[in-house]
Figure 1 (tube, rainbow, N blue to C red):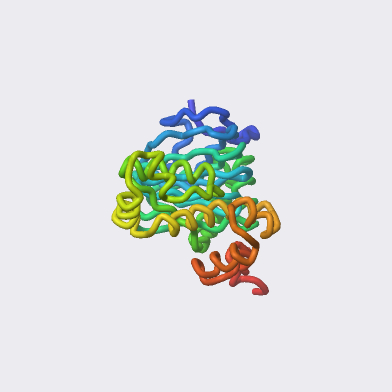
Figure 2 (cartoon, rainbow, N blue to C red; figure 1 turned 120 degrees about the vertical axis):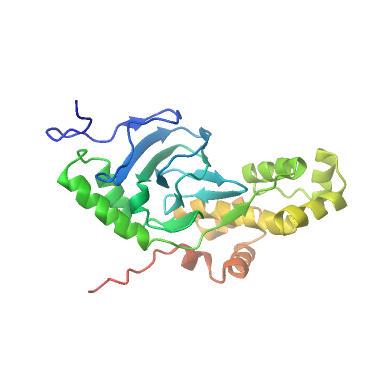
Length: 277
């Protein structure tokens, strides 16, 4: 019996569990883009895994944390992450989320190389993904939507906030705690007491393992956490307060110093080069 149905309307099945290794939705040359939909509560984990197809990891609602090797990204609905084929990755929900993962066949991958890429989810791309989730498998409409999605993805690369993660166990404990509470004002000396190391040792390990100081890493994680807040329309003054900055101007100055532009400019949708054509 054929897996694909041509005669009835079959929206994508929405899973509510984190089981991986399922083979009911697999891209192939005839169907290069397939969609896996999951509605998950906060603090759910899709444990580290890989597969022979590429993946665009996107949440229509909610916030994800995507980890690959010693890097992690915080992904709000305005952003997605391209994960190349065979690259091991882990996905955690930071709040209740509607995870919509696009599986892309190796012959249709929109990017070269083995590096993960941050993508901007335009209004068009968001609606294409939503439409694909409501489309019959194997239909002409699925083919057309897949072609449009691949075209949009190819032009969606944008600047992202990549967070480097350490392998040294004491640093790892500190960094994990700061990812959960980015507004923490605990000094490196206090952390040193908690993990049983000297402040000097931890400072040296941050420079060796992460190539930056403790303060620089903490600023990075705070800026990454700003993304979902700004995406939800939270005022910058409240974002600054939530993340432990003394003022909105202090937050904006640090953001501009790091990325060369203001938060509002950084997260503003790009204007399509096709506009008006």
